[in-house]
Image (cartoon, rainbow, N blue to C red; front, side):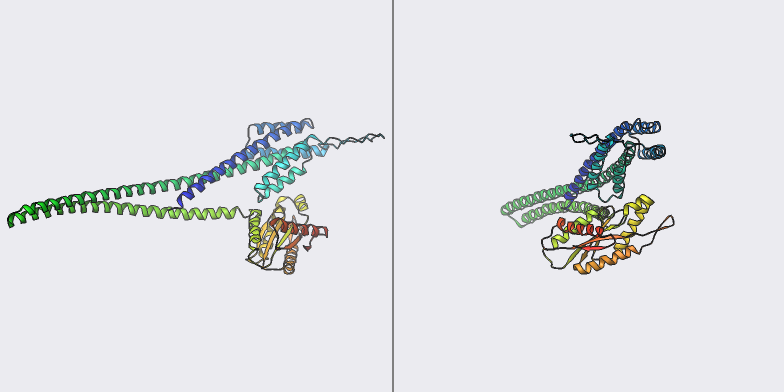
Length: 459
């Protein structure tokens, strides 16, 4: 029962945290919508067809149109941009006249107006990705933003980002409502139990008062009987006094016993009711524990590949760093990166890229032991922690996994596609921190890329 206030405080804190997170996402969505409006205004005048699309998007954005409507308008905008590009580029590259000889240095041309907005939007999305690195859609949004080469393209990308922010905010609102409902249930149960304890305490005080009354009555009767027996002059009078005194004492005892039995019955009934309430609360607590465990596990699993995400990896690697002070067993870190993954997305679409990520994740998870650990730590990057294997054996495991992925068969639209990975490997050393060990493995991965890819390099 002493843990009940902690649960109550914990869920109150969760509700406050979710409310704060919801406000932050609402502000972010507002900022993105303002940026879309400004980009729509900046893109006016390029082509009449684009002007109509941008005006419609700006109007819908100002009235906070829902995700479905904005998505439909973004698709229409994309088709219009494609049609306009077929006739002439939306933004023609400026022709730079030859610079006449002059002692003065040439002045660099100012970048297009949309470049500053693009940089701000990319930085804003980068900050969002720091809070939700396991979201696969973020990588797609970042690529769409960075590849935008016009106001119209940037506006379409920002609409997609605003849709994602809105969906994220709605999910947080639902979580907050669920947490509030659970808190309310726990509060009701706790108040019921506190009321029962208060009644029980009152009855104990009443029982103590009744005992004091009975004790005073009996002592008074005994004192009176003692005084009268001293004054009695014959046996008959003495017997009568004793009989009357004992009857009076017996009456007090019977009255006290009747009250005690009545209280006992009431207490038994309340105790049975309380036991039922406690059992129900324990069941709810177990279910709550299970739900929290499920939510905690879901928060540490990448939804696309079903392996651990970056947050879970950071926690696990920090644990291995902490355990390093108490054990001498080797621990190795492998970082895999899918080679030329961007070309898969660009050539065959993001669904094809998702299938590649899922297959690679399954292959890596199937190729390690139960004591090892695999996680998706970025767009196309995976990390594996091998327990008890030195660097040379970890290199063999890395090459086995690399070859297993290279042997996977992918066909998109009937075309066979070869998928390979590069890998950087390092072992955990005595004075390593999480950052230094990860950077060493990441540096080895870059060297593997420089060596032609589809290779493992140790550092």
